[in-house]
Length: 112
Image 1 (cartoon, helix red, strand yellow):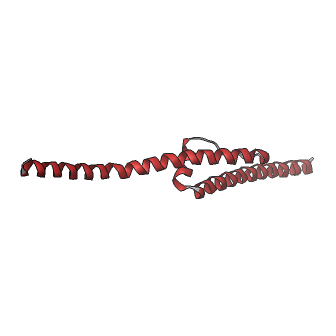
Image 2 (cartoon, rainbow, N blue to C red; image 1 turned 45 degrees about the vertical axis):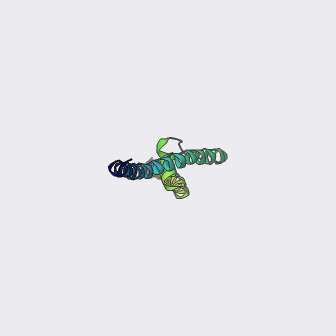
Image 3 (cartoon, helix red, strand yellow; image 1 turned 135 degrees about the horizontal axis):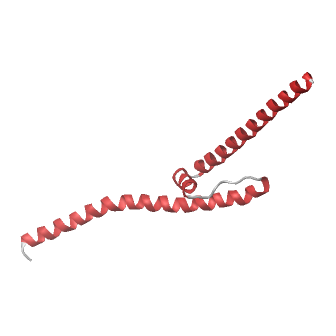
């Protein structure tokens, strides 16, 4: 093997090594996201099984599992907190609309 072939061979090895490093790093992150999303989906499933006793449910879909996949346990706590806040907001809105109706009925009954 002459000197030029050896340099070409070493340059190809270095190029393959650098090229491989560039693609392995994002591939590791993508695989980590996929694994975390699957684990997030399982975690949501466990939350739903436990929440059945309390009437609590988080939708199991791609978005919620990716949120838990990206953020981990804080993402799960975020989804649970959002669900509770939105549920309380709806309950408070219903109660406030009922009290307005009751006030109207009370005023109406006073007039009669």
